Length: 282
Image 1: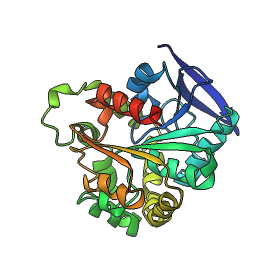
Image 2 (image 1 turned 180 degrees about the vertical axis):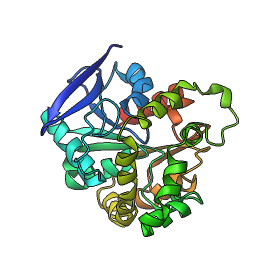
Image 3 (image 1 turned 90 degrees about the vertical axis):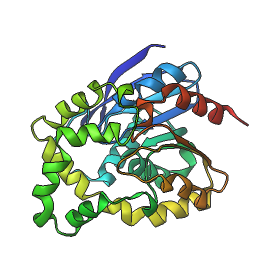
């Protein structure tokens, strides 16, 4: 399955995206996490492009999209640009496939335009405080007093060890991970201006936590077709979050996988198979 690597202008910003599959097939809008980009979805582009139209944008400040210093990096702004991106491409109905930061972006899109959401597939993205483990205590301290905690956050947040840990987590199968995954991401993080961009955006992450009750209410009200694919070895997000989604959507399909924060790193064939069955079932 061939993949197209394209760029489109969205309100003055050049937004890079990957695209695969026939344009008249059901669309999957793939929203990536931190510190990755649309590249994390390559395993699905090659496995599901026969039956689906897959579109994976890079957010402003990530991957190959523009990263202007004066953009104002918040999750509201990222969601605004991605929403306009879907309109520019004429995507008026899609399944949201979200991982990590893709969750906050995707839930904002869903709340703004529920009529566009056909289904949701969650991969290690949080919408309940159940998912925030011990690592988040220091991060909450940063939100409470940015000036006092920013230096410590930067020292840890952007280190090569932290970038590797996001992938490998606590997995006993370290040999299954391609080290290019985190060395490539580290190269992006080390670009000029990136640490300022990502620090500003992570400071705004506190608005996601504040929005959890509203997202849960949206899930309960709309009861979308929902699949949760959760990597059990995630060092940051707790496994309890996978089952928390059932409180809002009782018939959600939940699978806990032998994988870490980026489940596609280890289980691409399994995930593609689960998604295909879920998205084609009556």
